[in-house]
Image (tube, rainbow, N blue to C red; front, side, top):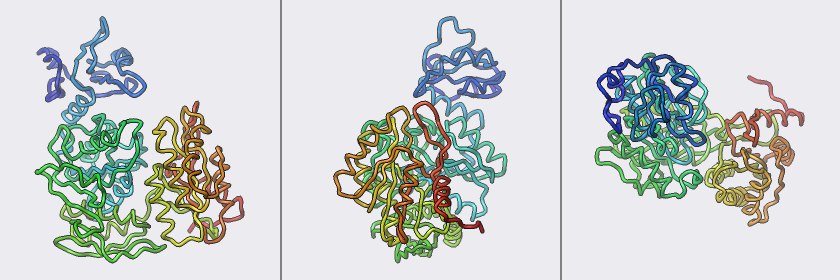
Length: 495
């Protein structure tokens, strides 16, 4: 494909010369280490480094040209193409290079503070129940036509996304479900993609270290529904019970499905039954009523299931297919994941890392009628400091015993982070302990448990690492908890 064809639609500072437009390009890359001969290299500013400093390395590896929103360094030895927006240019170029696979693959994008991962797993299960070959892209891992790939970002860079879509199409796939983070929207990682269905789960305080204000955070989420660089989605699925969702301006070109528990929702849940075995309720919409059953627990998953049902309806699937998919989604890694070694109390691991998510997770546990709830949590370093006391207060107000520990401290002092959270805990009189070593803290929380209690290990969920100041270490709450339980003499043989 020629350079002119690849950059069609990209806003350039100056037109390509005819010889440059006819230059053959073999591939695209934004990481100089992966450049091969004949590639076009995209150099854009990152959070820590400027891609321009790797442009020379890219050329030495065979790049035929460099595209950047910044001017060329002096005496640069290869063609340098200035674009108005580096990531937008990469997104449009990748769509052109892979011949617009998003126009043939039906894309479902899910945004919101909480519930994205669980909702994506539920929708993928519905699609597979309908006989579709799918891709699932999100926080935990990527699934591609039955293969499991490691997740680098919740939402990959546009080039990686288009490459995945092209591979899915080559494998006979037809549908992709993806979590769309606010960072991805703000940075242009999904710029130009055509979404069939866009879902907004909810909005609560998070990522203000990046966005600054809730209004800016909300503005980033809106971009999925306004169609940044592409037409608005054919379907908009919105949470009727969330204040921010109700404020969302929706294009007149999108058909809206509102989900929720109230009468004003287009798709709502009725006759909800919740117990240790899961959820059972009736889904009611304007055209039909049908029952769904799920092994997932708690009110928050009623909302996730309703959102997934709306996605299924947007694709025209019959109720029995939607219900079958919901039933087949057995568990989501690190989302209220139960750790069972035969102990007489519950232990669950959950990704909750905001005050609202903590409240929701503890509410799910409270709905199981435990004698006591013991909550372990920590706060991430190099992130929004203002949410730390809110998390401490949320854990303390809803729990019977709190263990405050370290999460991913990154470059910050773990004790300083914990002191911020301790302010919120001390607004209550809940019994609590402070233990900066997370493994020791998990052992302390489990040691505190008595028969009939539930221990919640919150914050890291599916993560298998802990990010410290100078290194990243292997750490999995689930494996640590199993080890502690076995050390206390519990052990359950696998089935």
